[in-house]
Image (cartoon, rainbow, N blue to C red; front, top):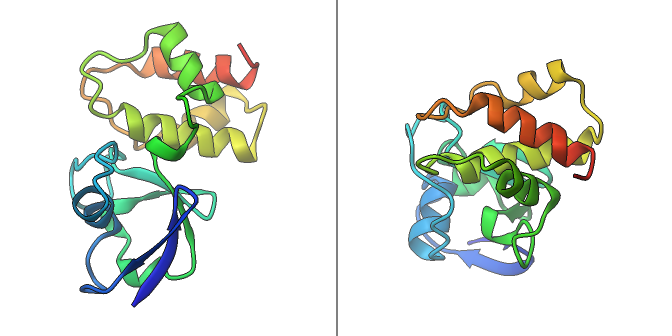
Amino acid sequence: MVTLKVNGQERSFDGDPSMPLMWYLRDELGLTGTKFGCGVALCGACTVHLDGDAVRACGVPMSDVAGKAVITIEGLHPTGDHAVQVAWRNVSVPQCGYCQAGQIMQAAALLAKTPAPTDKEIDDAMYGNICRCGCYQRIHTAVRAASKGA
């Protein structure tokens, strides 16, 4: 049995320990903000926070989350008003929106560790989170705005 916290709530899992965290979040808990993209931890659509670090949930087996805390896009802020979420709306980042939860979670993890990142630090942190629509300039602008509290 695996016990963990998801968005602040104690949870338990008694299934296959090799099951990816992403499927547990989506199928068992109904937290569908975590998206399936590539399935091999390369695109970033499934990014969540695991003990404060941005991770690709499709590549994390349930056996690795025992005793840890997971935050999904649904748990980032109770009303969707985390600084990154606000900046995303203010900058009008999304087009199709598919990758945006993963992008937001990656950006939020960056700003939690580096509140005033340089442009290079933003680029490095966001590298590998793929946007099908090519919204990279607006993503960068929104991360910069969130870092300034705007």
